[in-house]
Length: 193
Image 1 (cartoon, rainbow, N blue to C red):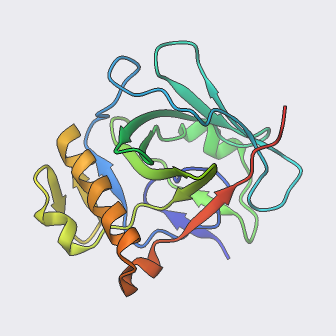
Image 2 (cartoon, rainbow, N blue to C red):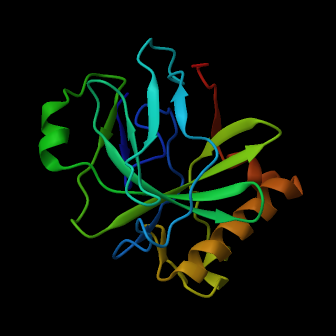
């Protein structure tokens, strides 16, 4: 079944269907104001293929790329929030990259986004385990300053809003609240170098 995403997700082949999306009308993070991460490396494909996922620094400030051979490449910037949580800002893949990747039944289909729109997801590094979460957006996120909720998802208008949304998300996950069960994630297994 083809899955359509309203924003790119943290990894190209993760089988996560977004219940809501986080995005901003223009990127909030760049190589100068983003944070470096302690989890750069090569990871096994969560879908089980032999094609590893590579998260690597570009060498330009705190800029990273996320790529898999034969897949689209995302530019990533991270915002560290608290001790374990990171917001991952992703560029959209270009229309050319999407056109070059055939869409087969069962694969993700990534919709091209407006040139200046940025999408967000979350990463959590806890006890040596790295999890990639989809950015669920529910109406209560609209109560956070710098976040606007509508039927499409959460529009993040500034860095304080992004940090507030991540903190709220983390509280929901850690609360054991029944609704938090909808917050899907995958564990990323690092390939030793």
